[in-house]
Length: 261
Length: 248
Ligand SMILES: Nc1ncnc2c1ncn2[C@@H]1O[C@H](COP(=O)(O)OP(=O)(O)O)[C@@H](O)[C@H]1O
Ligand SMILES: [Mg+2]
Image (tube, rainbow over all chains, first blue to last red; front, side):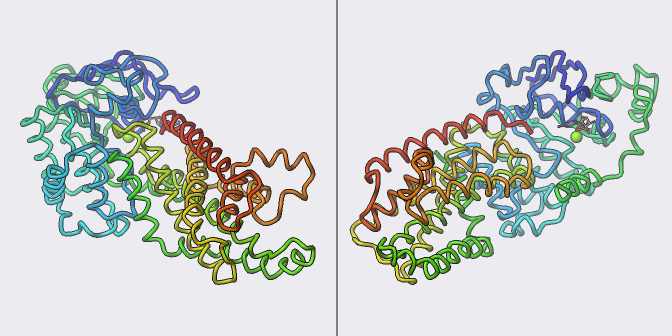
């Protein structure tokens, strides 16, 4: 479903993604686990036509997104790490915009919008402008929006960062059911270890732009002779990822970046 | 088709919710109308050029249209900064349709502003020469709006942040405006400048509008119409191409 061969991205001299290769099968839930700045978002951007690789090859649903962008875009849906809502529209209007843009037929669209907004507990706020929402509410809306059109592949970039455990579970239950019922392939990034361990059938650990190991959580533990994923991660990268789990700081940083410009 | 529609609706909603923007973008044309109309009017008329308000009316309408249009086009930069641009870029929609949808949205907003300023000009004393030609005048408002929204959108697709906005305004929009025949006739300018003005798209918007509202045009309404359509097509195609090159 996803095939990546020797993918590299340089920003000037800096190598953000360094010669990575991996494959994700149809119906799989695949996690990219790595600390901040590891190259997770850059990889997702290349997979989703937002960024041109410096070198390497990509296949998405057997389509090359570099030469056939239009067709590749039909194959996936994405929830970005940083904000991507229209603040001046209401929650419902943001959902409707997405559904129409992706050509979901009206009846189905309205059904899914209602279902999804109920799941993320925003249905009673559907008429509120997004600019009145808190960071967590915006995040929930973005995830819901990314699920309106059921594509072959869903990309989720740090989907549940900064959400409370209960919402996190609701959202994952829904994604899991989509994954099982419609065998939608899920590719997500996280630096939240339990999320990778619980949700993903396979994990790639990425650090400094390189994939240092990949396999199921058990395989990674066996490989490093450890008994849990956190220790395996420490053994592979020399880093304790828990230090980085300061929750919503990423999004705060992003908001600050907007205002500083 | 649906994608064009939803992009169009989105911009109308944003516009209708921003009263401040609506009013502030009327302030400038109104100021020009009053200051120039009452300030220069007597001089213009003494020089035997006829009624200045009749000359100025279509020019100020064109001004409202071009300023709003460029600004609407440049909303792409906001979308980039607030992250929303990504949402449209990854969608399975052709870049041409994105460009058309955005341009139609911005052009509708600019056309509304143009009509409001036309009404203001009527209040100040402007009178169109023929009620039957008002439809044609409206057509020129729309065409001018499309051309400059497309131009604004195309430029903005290359820009990272709003800091360039004043530069675009001062070095592109203002010169285009002053050399468009909107506030003074181009005929009295040196031949070289008159020739250069022929490459200014706004010249044809102003000329067509004046033809429809006052019954006096330099190039002929039909020529203005054809030229504006062609420019709109070219700007739209360039914009679509630039959109396909955006990386985030
Ligand atoms: N547009 C860019 N220009 C320069 N450097 C960038 C750009 N985007 C990302 N980087 C750098 O590439 C590295 C990887 O970033 P990113 O993919 O966002 O990491 P992650 O998502 O794993 O936290 C970081 O060091 C980041 O600063
Ligand atoms: Mg990231």
